Image (cartoon, rainbow, N blue to C red; front, side, top):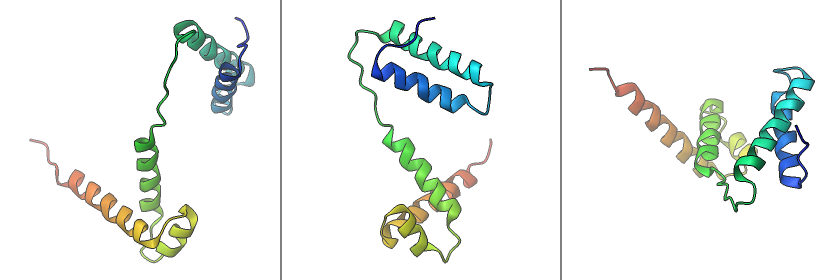
Length: 109
C-alpha cells in the first residue's frame, strides 16, 4: 500500500490514525489510516469534491451538551464557556426541552 503523497490525504491518514489510537494497536491504526487515504485517492482522486461542514449536526451536539450541563443555576457559566449570551443559552435550553418533551409524548401504536 502506498503512502498518501499530498497534504489532504496525509491529513486524512493522520486523523483516522489518531481516532483509532486507544481502540486498536498503533500499527493497525497506521495501516487503517493509510488505507482510508488510499481509498479516497482511488475513488475520488482527480475530482473536485465539496465537503460540507455539517454545521447542523455540530450545533445539535453542542446544544445537547449545553442542555446536559445545565443545572438550573449555571446559565452565566455556560454562556461564558460557550461564548454566548445568557439569552441564547436560555433559548437553547428551551428548544432542547421542547425536543425531549416531543420525543416523550410519542407512544407506540
